[in-house]
Picture 1: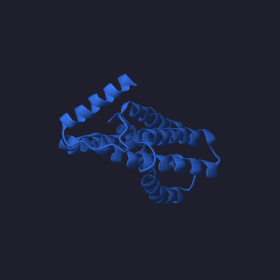
Picture 2: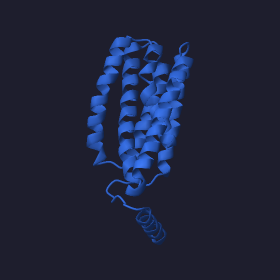
Picture 3: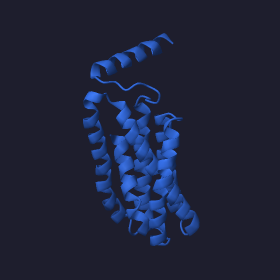
Picture 4: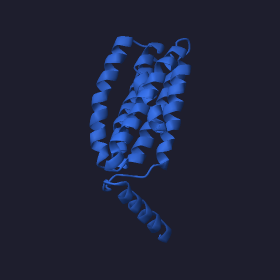
Length: 190
């Protein structure tokens, strides 16, 4: 849930923070909106071929690094616009992959509740984002620095989650516990 808080803050906050940067607001909003389409396409292509944890870690760190670089670059408007787009694209892709990953993590008996809690954490991150954007009105490093730290550091929590790609989804908690115990035993033996 902590990872979803950081992803949600950036996903909902970056479009609000575009006014803090030094380029055309209307063009950047339009490009941000269009960047969600390739993010969905990349999610579709990645989900079947790359591990969930690896892809989430990659996209959250990439978004964080691009957020920092976006402010460090300063007045180079074209480069700043591209860095912001890559950062938002990465946040969108991480958002999509995380929702798929969350669905696969939990057994059927608790899946609806768990996905609802994770979705609420995403939206809670979105609740904090206007405050962060308002704090960065005078200096963009405040808002984009907080965005970078939140998605970068919160994305690191994904490392502690189990990998779900190619594994069966459990129906009950007992079945999930048996799978977990069997994987622990196989790890000890190997």
